[in-house]
Image (cartoon, rainbow, N blue to C red):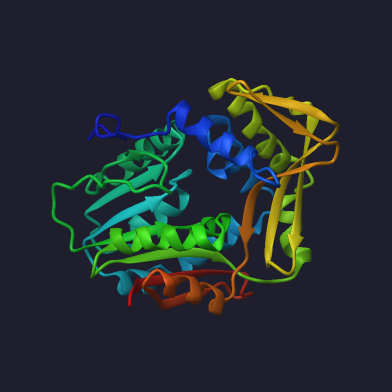
Length: 320
């Protein structure tokens, strides 16, 4: 199967990106959408982040998936159409598709076209019996799913990496409602969630000693300069990530090193020296907190798996 020929390409246009950026810079405090981190270079840098010693999330989630796969497969059931939000490198997907009972099709929805194609080509070679139907799109918006040739018994939305934590509670509920629609009456959603623990463990994961996360964050500005013609000075901003105990999350910022002005689509935006522009949330969950969000979307947690240290969890959600 030629995965490229089966690609549904709905990736955001420059006008989409400009609209989101202008809206974010017009807010107080200013913010930029984290979904635009993932151009080709951003995807490469994120994979490098996942291999840093401080970044425990990917390492633990992979081990948890492997250890729990037999139970997950039993709970999910056979002949699923796996729909993944944000396919990344495909390391976790490979474990899931290999462990499930006769998966019918795999639809990754990824905003980075280059990352999507690279991941899909590898998976398509390895899983010839699974129809691969990639969609290049922003999964935070409604996405029409391609229909596989072989009828699936149900859909399984796969959302690993605690990526749900990158959204505000209101945004997360909207995303969970979209999952509710996608999974159907007999389907489910398998979420990875980073659990509450000591800030001494959490904070270094977003401030690695090698500075890879800082490069990743600043690459967002390089991507915007290239794609929408903005004039962010990359040397004029620095990465900062803090654990905010009251909110139970990491908040990541780009901080202006000096007073400066930035132009986007002919509109000027002033930054004071030391002004922090929010670029990402990384929520850390309790079971009660996740259950409350799920309930607002008409979902409930039906199965739960944690690593031995209770640092990270996998949760299977179904309709209530």
